[in-house]
Length: 260
Image 1 (cartoon, rainbow, N blue to C red):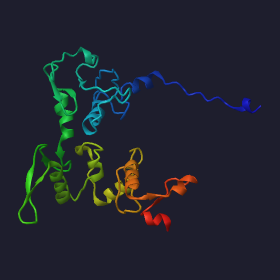
Image 2 (image 1 turned 60 degrees about the vertical axis):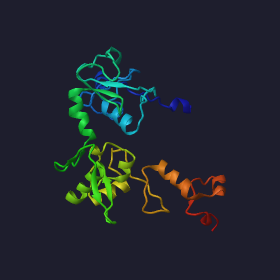
Image 3 (image 1 turned 135 degrees about the vertical axis):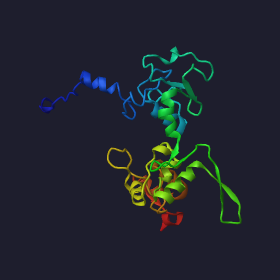
Image 4 (image 1 turned 90 degrees about the vertical axis):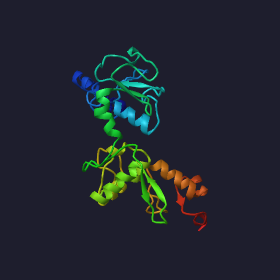
């Protein structure tokens, strides 16, 4: 009997040490929650580190809990009292007492020391190769080549100019524009490293295998497949006959090419 030959494969249960280890790491990035500090949410899903929440809330304007999708207008990060729940903190508008800093752009309260040591550096426009640093609010005037008109250079542009002229390094423009991470955390790359990043990604375990290219618009690349598909739908053409016979994603450069 074939049914008797089938072996039941049981999944081994986690040991107590493994359970304890998992409870001490962020369930999104697997960083140590004693370093990045767990955030306290009104929905009580407190197993995600403050840095992951900050990326979601500040860079992507997403205040939903990654687990239950409840919108949490404000959350608290307090490494000094890990057992205290969010509802135990007194709240007066944008204040929850002395020793905390509120970042309105993320809707997050941070214990003051942790904020200055771990959060402020994330927002910085620093070189990471030397001591060069641009203040977040710095805007400088540059003279254009056409008749003396001035244009404003933002901190990001000033940092890119410094990396290029002083170190011959670049950052990925697609990663910057789509807010993959804080600019302070994006890699500084040589031209060969940048090309490898665009074509093949950042290596095994990074979760990133490169920015896809449009075969019709080379060398134009897009942040991910979703943006590439949006471009293909907007700028190029599909054959409806191919779709009907099961050949999906058959794209053509122009409407004329469909019939050639």
